[in-house]
Image (cartoon, rainbow, N blue to C red; front, side, top):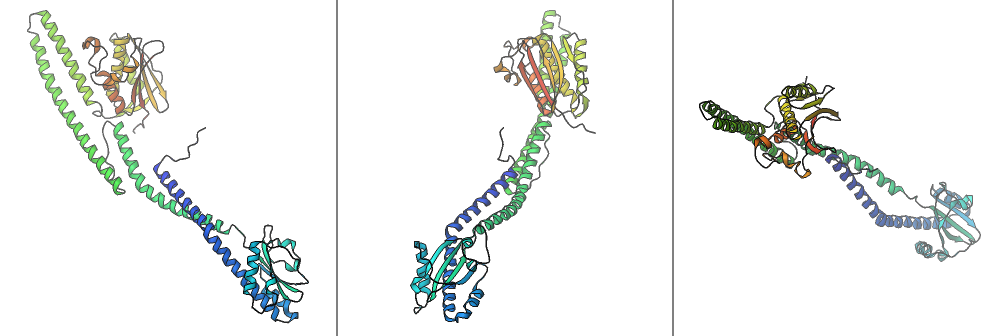
Length: 456
């Protein structure tokens, strides 16, 4: 199973990148802290150990013997414990670090302090292993301490036990700071993402709506950052020019179509006065071809958008068309059992289905029409028993004036505009049309029309 970790939308990508930047920056700070500040912190703590030890040792040596315990109890805290050891302290070999600490304590003691160079240090000791009178108030399972032994006089030694600061505090602080930073930066990123993504989403919605509404594209708000606002202005300017061009084209073609029909009609009337029957039939055939070509060109050029959408039953519309063709003697079969409500331009859909059926009859001998209700769309299928179309030509036949029959004869090859018009109508409704060869011979045309919200 493939798990997509990277978000798809721009808003979540912006938030993810910002949060990742905060995490990386805080990790860098943590690394720097561990490498530099921790060393400084340890140096500061060790200085306090030395100062406190020498101060207590000097004080205890100067006070009467009977008050020493009271002084040491007073100087002890939750993390520091001072106590007196009577008798010799067991000797042990010190590490270089411990020797350094012992030397620092010796140097800090007064010059006249006796036995000042006999200081002993144990760098790491478990307080639980010490006698009760040497243990500090704070005890824990992972506690670590440092113990200093400073001679007072004779056989009396000062034990100074210091609990080391517990680790992990800087890490917890950094984790807390990182979490707070991510929350604050995420809110800022969400605000910025909305300013950027909302205009882009409206721009994408307008472009998608224009692709499925026959060229009617709403203006998008010219808001947001300067780059996004510039894109919205350019988009609005482009759609205005395209809409104006298409509208001018429709008006021009309507005028040309009207002007062409008038002379064609006049020529038909004049042909009635031609006495040569063979010449009249030839000229009449040429006029029929010219009129058919004119109508096909006008229909393909107009494409979609000239007719308002309304609610219809797609099954009833296609069944009516098939019934009309059947009454005209065309070999058409249909199986359309279920209603298919849809919001569409019914005359355009009727024209597209008629072109598919007439192509199936002309090149495949018969047409079998069905409607399938698939997820998200209705699929009108028209099948025939003809030779099919080579795979390399199945896209090319949708181009204007492309005919696989090379004679350029209308009776055998058509005008080359029927499938062009079908494609324009299907795409104008947000659908598409696909041609495919059947396994048992013949061609299958599938025109998909999306389920649309039925207007009230």
